[in-house]
Image (cartoon, rainbow, N blue to C red; front, side, top):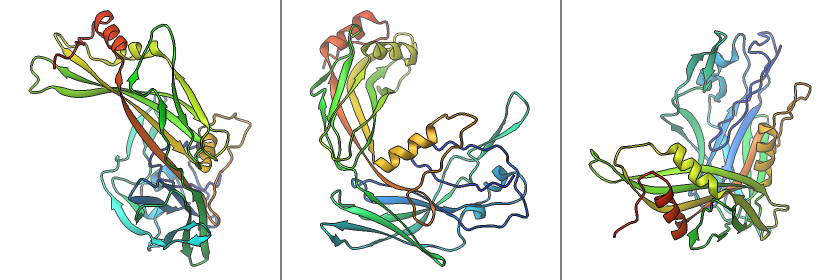
Length: 338
């Protein structure tokens, strides 16, 4: 069976790799297909873009993938990001290259059937990345242009704007008898919203040289806005009981440990419509009778150029929740004395 492997560096999201064979037709004609993966965030001072090429070859493609020459171009590509605002083009930002080191090294495991499974099959511990230095304007639309000998590749994205969490405001309450809500207004150019909570606490026990800062984090859920116009009221529920359950499960039972509650961090990552569609397609289970579609907004290549923006709001734990945690659970939590 002839296959073409698309090498995409995921940065913050997970790509599901589906394959019914690891063998290639060694006599197949090679076609130069450029793979692009880039996420723009106006709050970053650097925009990262992964640009690779598809590859083919005889034998096990997972072994071929471990060779950097399989997916990297032997020369530097000419790539720029250009913004357009109020009908006027902004100054183009040229992409340069850099090698990212200490990427997780490829490893292998043997499954229950005795087959060798390759983990993190693409080359490591270093990865070649393209990057552009300079803050982006959240009110502009940006186009990525990659010039190749056979013609340019282009893609564009609106920038996910800033937004704010409106509830909870000053205190975060977890009730065993009722669910709570997190509320915010959607971001312009944003579609997919993923909400995460992180409970921070201090810990001290015999043998510690100092008090440790620790946390327990969990994913609350995701919610899509109806449009990308922004200012849509968004509400997602969370379980108060789950807060106490996860602490009972995750906190290590240390003898005579002392712990003190700190703030709760609410994090919402908002992705553009292109990013939302890409994640939905690649994370869908589908069936054996369905062919997984390939989604791309790259004209002349494959992959995505999209946008996201992440906000975080720290809020103190409510006094009622803290009292319940201290008095009803044997986890070593105490009231702060200073």
